[in-house]
Length: 285
Ligand code: COA
Ligand code: MG
Image 1 (cartoon, rainbow, N blue to C red):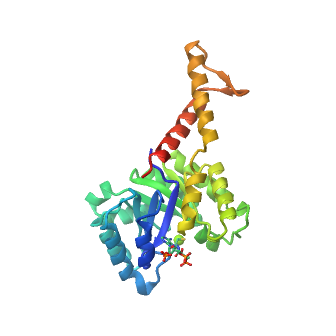
Image 2: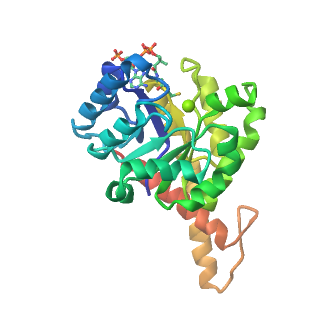
Image 3: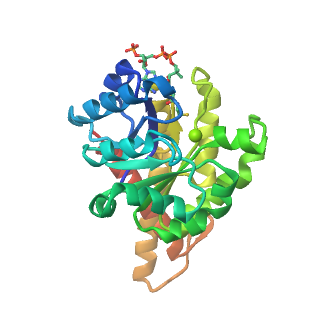
């Protein structure tokens, strides 16, 4: 099982942050050439990111590069740089239709486009509404990242602690991801010094079905991993459920009762997923 609990953005124009990223426990790192890098820094950022990717990967992170938008003057060279780098994938911003993904694929070229996993940003109204058609159209898409900051700007949805205004976008993205067998990552929590608020948002993301959360600061990494990893209690319950299931199955029953609740085959699948996640988390470097 691939862990994608914590996805840390690292601005390409911040050498200290790039260096620091190599030692962090984030499952995935997104080296950013887009929103966090100003126009005057784009070239240097690209060089920095390529250099960082060449340094090796001591913590076996999944390393992704976020390129600039199709209409920008930087996109083509960003893609060329990713193609010849050691990146594990490319993150495409503001995807609104299957044609947008095709356009990036053409820039990647036939060969690279076959073996470069695509991550896409769901961060516009059209992107959210079209997400299912987009993900079904392209088997190279591996992950959807939600971008609620851009979405707020476009839609005028206000940020509130309960995130009520974003519920539709969050749930629609989870549905699109599951319908295509993809991972889905929640947006960032910008108030990075507020760990209580951050953890509340992580727990909400778990409840809504997300696999992980986008992060902006190293202090968020451990808290995020903790929230998206089954705790001891959840792991023990999954083990007990499987034991009860096996015992009852041997007696020929296909529906059993565990802890006062009905358990069927589907619950067994979920218990196995929980245990696989816990095991993968324990074997992290
Ligand atoms: N990745 C890796 N390291 C990071 C980091 C990140 N995203 N953000 C901060 N750091 C490092 C700093 O370089 C600093 O390292 P040092 O102490 O070894 O010198 C350390 O963490 C502490 O940083 P701090 O001083 O607390 O943060 P800051 O005030 O300098 O910066 C932000 C705060 C939010 C501006 C910064 O964290 C950032 O740029 N985050 C990413 C933003 C981004 O990518 N946005 C696009 C997606 S929405
Ligand atoms: Mg954006």
